[in-house]
Length: 90
View 1: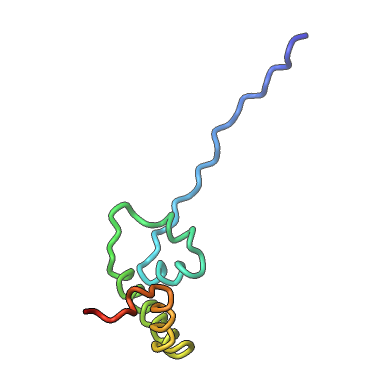
View 2 (view 1 turned 45 degrees about the vertical axis):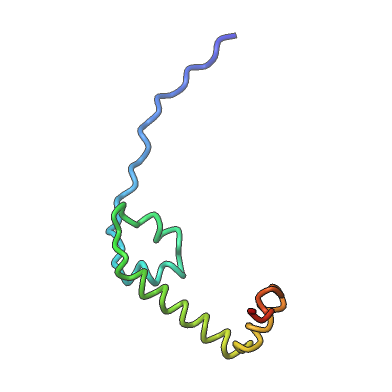
C-alpha cells in the first residue's frame, strides 16, 4: 500500500527578539522569573548587580541566624558535632 504524500511544511515562525533586561530587571527577575533572567544573560555579563545582591542575602542570613537561633547556640551545636575541636589545645 502506498503512503499518502505529506503536505509541504512551512518554516517555523521565528520568535521575535525581545529587548535585553536591564541590570535592575535582572535582579528583580532573579526572584520572580529566574528562567527568564538566565536565558537573557549575555556570555560576558558583568557582576555589578550580583555582588551587592549576594552581600545583601548574606547579611540577611547572618542577621536571621543571630536573631532566631543565637550565635552561642550555633557555636555549641558546631562543637557537639566535632568534639575534637572542643578539646583544649596542649
